[in-house]
Image 1 (cartoon, rainbow, N blue to C red):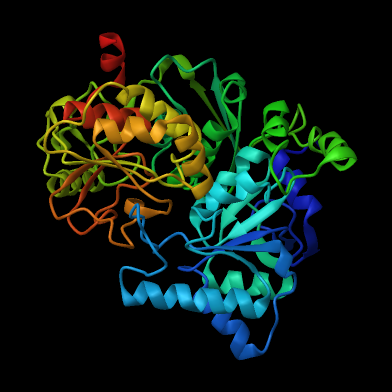
Image 2: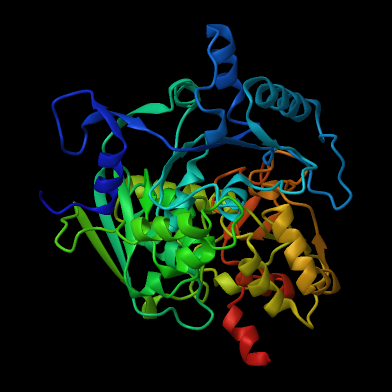
Length: 476
């Protein structure tokens, strides 16, 4: 057999049937999917379709329901939603999970949180699995050695009824991160550097494998950040070969194998990697030592620059379409060409989202904020990725560091990442954000988003403007 990539191995082991005569990229197959995570926002139509057709869910135990998109994150929140539309979504989601026998982590459940934070911390996703869900950031699970990807509403219905999907095989791309990241540079900067390099559609049609010494040196949570945000470069699936760090991460997870089953699982998991001579359709190498702390200046994640840089000039862009896009982005963001990024003042600072709201992210931000205060005129918010993360942070005293610095310490949920509840930017407000998307209106109509790492958000909050976190480190 010819050498295969990890992606090929996972697809081959989950292929139920071939739906055409092809075996290369573009071949259509019937794919077995091990698990899914459902939320109140993307699942209603799928359940309605099942009800109308009189179908049941084939394997209810393979699905997990989580309320995370529309729920409030106020410190004293109750079960009530901030608007009737959200309330209807949550009620219907509860009815669906009850009627179809699916476990539900509702708003007040002690394990509630953002789906891509909750599933790994429960051990619900394991190496070697294929996971498909109605959220594009399902790619997060690649950090565990699983293949994760987002699907649409009709696909959710098909999956729930059959445990399978019609799936078109992707091309393969390997991104090798060489060396160690410099001090003050994080996994968020690494994935933003990739997206800046290849563009917002550079990985379209590809399943991406991240590899190299730079990846091996990262914590599992940092790897989740990379896999989560790779979709912003167009990736349709992401994988990383599981290693000892992943096995250790899963050791205390409640739903991961234990005892003899764990030993057997690790023997299998250890073989989940690309063959040494496997050929990828595209190869990219990134030198970790060359990455600097990055911030976005535009309305797409690839519109980013080192924080010490300047806003680009559209007139310097030779391509007419790109020149028009740059001009539109700067008009929306209210920025002039040539402006030093570190001179851009902010009114909001947000630490949260499925990209950067895990315990390690909060620790990084708290280390910057310890003994400091948020600048006058800046409103800071910390929204932990899950209720479990919130409790763990409080046990370490991180909540006190945040509140003493002037940040709001809130409950878990998607929150200001996509402004589907009462956490929104006002028109014209500028936010330093640890989220994954800076699209127009993403955090509220007219809101202006600058993406960066949690530590960089904390530094901007203290300075009152975009700033290099390494500058604050030198002041200690």
